[in-house]
Length: 163
Image (cartoon, rainbow, N blue to C red):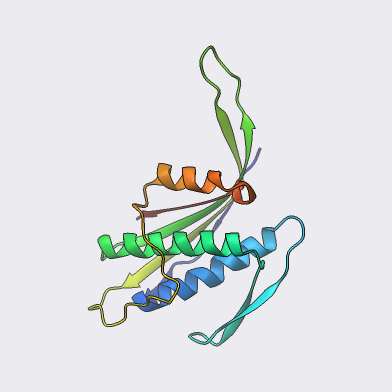
């Protein structure tokens, strides 16, 4: 199966803009890839004076916000680095079982690479919204396990790394 890779141009953002920029981009991508019934929800971004659409699924919104919080925490721990979030869509299939193993195989069909260069300034803006979550270590395997635990999101995976 071929995997379509979309590499977005690097975005220069201030620390306090990360949350809104990522919400806008990630929700827009997910909205256009949503399968089945969605309840479109317009979101106005006062910071940039634009409107984008979300799927209207509370679990999906929560999952995206959790991953954004993890990314922000990661950026704070790794200042002065260009960062990337990869939003991957995949299908999971059972792989040929051997004696004592039952493995699943991921067939990626689309990946979006979002590159951010975060301007490093003293923490004048915390950017924390009223719905901030407790942040967990953003290790890729732990993140993948959490994403797979949600049945409605089993075809969606986000990860991030430095460049």
